[in-house]
Length: 357
Image 1 (tube, rainbow, N blue to C red):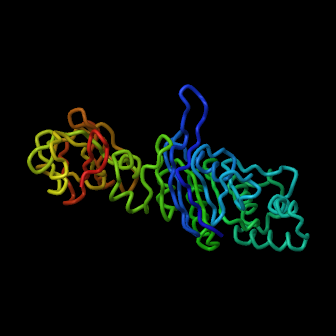
Image 2: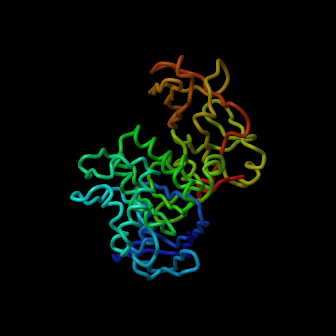
Image 3: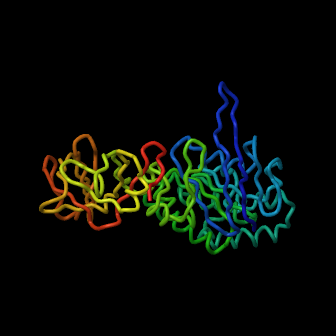
């Protein structure tokens, strides 16, 4: 096992002008950590993973696995194992043969291969399927076979590129829990790519958020949620997303409609000469109130059982509020909305997008 270090690594695609799919990527992943790379489509997360795997060139900077500089090494010499979005199983081979194929190429004995495959199959609850072929398996079982093929190699680093995208919602939840538990058991450094920020928040020891090839923030899920470094991270992390609106500053806070929403004194001080800020508040930090607060015109109610999400407008700004699912308002209602408590608001510089604190 080993840690991973990206040192100002860039991947540049030729063009006019050239495109930096990954731009000066600096990141250190300690040995044994489960790191998730997350971002919207085209953010460079899969490219960064493929650079580490040796499937994409590193045009600038360097990449280290443990003490070795692997920047220009071929994939076979990097001691990594990769699980792709597609299962990429050999249809004519049994589960056991699929899992042990890489070991066979290494020249291991049949006894050693069988022992390693049996151990991995037990971890993944695949023992009773070892004699089946992929066509006789469900999607979740095939994905576990792909993971087993990676596990038997005992690599220094596991790389996973959106491995759950082809699974249905229920199976995806179950499988991501199994992957996180398995990684803790094995203790192998793992870098996992996903566009699903809920998946990222529930699986990773740390989460790295990318946008347009640039690392925005890398921190624990809780830190990303409570202290996003800029308005992009604030709006990307959380489901539903944080409410963001550009509002004028006034004494004590920001003005929204006919009310002033308070901001901490430290934020107002750091705002300096700004006349307006990007104000942020999460749906769960708002509540319906009998009086006071600001008026919201309800446009949509998402009923999810225990909770409901109320979507509405205040002037030109849209807000989402989490409410009790048993007594939600109806579409077309006018409701009053207030803050649940102090310290649950955020503010960002509208020019730099950086957090004010």
